[in-house]
Length: 268
Picture (cartoon, helix red, strand yellow):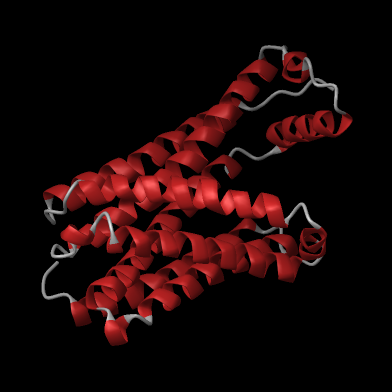
């Protein structure tokens, strides 16, 4: 079948990619210029996301999900959702905790650095998910629209791999243009979540003692977000319901973070 992708879809892909770049850049400039945050936390946030989410967490997923236990996990969406949520929460929040305890230990005196770290951590995730995916989509869409769709499957001999590529092509062509903006809309909530969780872990490390409970709270909230997203996505095809839940959880985390900030920080 010859597929084509609407021009509006391609435009929205490009817009999403630009938003993925703009989010971390704008946050970096705001936190640096307005709140006098240090530069280092931003790049440490980027590095921690790469190390703990893209490398370490992925390694565990490869080990667990390819085992017998993994097959049992993926066969039940509730178990799978909880597993995904816990892994994300444990790895990413432990990454934050480790960064604040080590590399950024000397930066703890400046509270806006918590915001700058969150901008780096969540901002790099936005670049990784939005920019990477949208560029890939744009390349595929342009190839299809130029009548060269067959080139997308050249050299693929594995039937399963070929089926996946064909399914991706079909989904790309059949999607509504607005679908390609949903990822960027979701990123605003995701980055707000990352900044909020960074604040919680920041004060867990900085204040320590009886404030350590903020660290497991951050793990729980992160796990809640990812678990809810996975489970809701399996039960509902209505993207607005899913996005609504994401924004509700993110907004709740922002409220918690602001409350913690007002209680433990003397200045912004």
